[in-house]
Length: 346
Image (cartoon, rainbow, N blue to C red; front, side, top):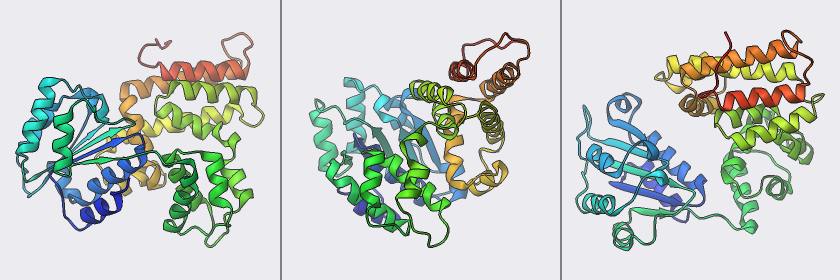
């Protein structure tokens, strides 16, 4: 996003706009901007009263603007973040409501839309023109393949990673143009590397190599995001390579994960550092549990644990005819992904 540095600088300096509409095919820049607003607009104490996060599939433009016209409690600013704004219906009535709010925004409200992986409907010309005229809309475009190594090099410098000269090109080859994944992998490497340890091709191969896409940690992430196709693909691969991915380790890891998902839902309103301490994880990984809790509320997380116990017994040959680990891991993943519709044996 060409304007990202300017946007982030203004946000950090408490220079805010009443409306931010981030859209485009590259989700990474939108995520960075939204995160900056979440971090800088309100203090932790103020967030309880004056920060609202809604999701496009669960609301409407009319409801959003109704929220935006309210006034802050015990503070001078209110922050409303609309995630997954691409799921919002934008018909004629919604477009008119949007135009009306742009023409008269509430000064104490900061309203931010994260319209990811696609652009705002270009046919809504009046709306687009009005957003552009007021400098409220920001396009997040995919990088060209040739620009990805430069992005990686910038991330390496920002994270203060000591890296060999060829690493940016090597990572681009492994990770492609998914900037969010590139950033997350580099953050993980930063946590893994010893102080001043040189990041070289052997460490990249060890921690990020292509086979590393198919392990229990990536399986956990895919399940936590309820990404069925990715989770089943990883399950199939792991089932074919059970010497590298033993069933006992997979069961143990997923049991720990869903136990933490349950725990998170009892402490979700704690400060991030305290949540990380309770879950016994690095604060960076708290976001994984925030997302998983959306898909697996207490009822479903509890059912998932029951499924894991059921598969654990089957893997030990109890109460079932001989079944391979390959079949069991696919059964495990399928049942968890479809936890809202399956029946649990009692």
